[in-house]
Image 1 (cartoon, rainbow, N blue to C red):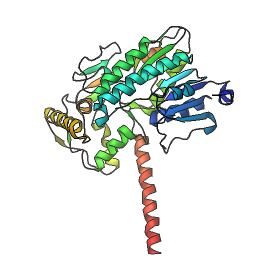
Image 2: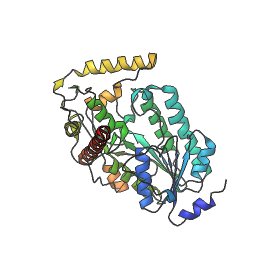
Image 3: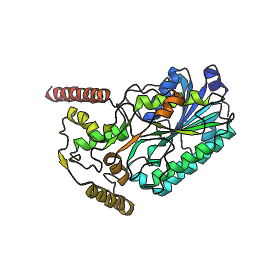
Image 4: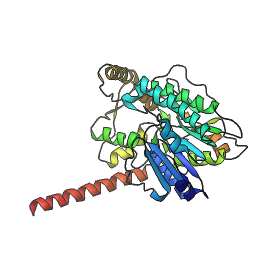
Length: 367
């Protein structure tokens, strides 16, 4: 297959590949890379529209398909310097319990990515990891990256992400093929669907009625979309150096400043959409047990769980992470930490648009 025309357009600035780049993080990353003048190849199963993201289509190549398709992998990687591996399965809900798919996509898929990166002489591979590789039941207080991997995983997703991270870091070959992993914890932002929109949906449905902390209070750090994208681009710049300090390492990528209370962080957003934050407290063990039952119902009957045990623990048990290594090695400087203003404004604007549509519809019906 001839890629000469595509490659000629970005020869002066570089060509990068984003696997699993059709989602929220991937499209934001693509936009940032294009601002830096790069040509971006995106491989993903779907390319949903996000209201606040607009890519330069003259600097974008979209390939619809899976990382398990080796021909498409080669097409996506051809001529690239860097590969951002964001593709994955099972980040939340019942999908996180699907052992077969998590193993297939997160482990075998990563093995294929590494193999084809080498075949296509990719210089750098940056893997989007998860803090769940070091967190399960125990409190973490500014955990560093050398915190041991957990031995008992709460979900096949967490286990598969751990295995995949090890594969990526082990593949590092100084001076030839640089790799690193960035561990995120709940990426949020205006228009983000998995975390932010889910919080809104659950609130509007009246399903956020109580708190259930085991740690009191329960502190954590989330990963703002701006900070997350910044970390990914900084990682690429670091790996391009022949003596890269980031090569072969994992980094925690969360917001800076004081940790926030895991559930109370979302209260301003809830109030902005007309929902009263919960005032009732339910014992943690009851909620954890209910999550266990919901997991069983999913495995037996396919009923989507309201929350999994991992999701319960993430907002019930203190888990905070040190970003000092990312600051030192990558130059990571979070600029927008634990700030919901842009998200609240986003939903206010969406509500205004909906109100206008309803008014126009009523006018048409009256007319």
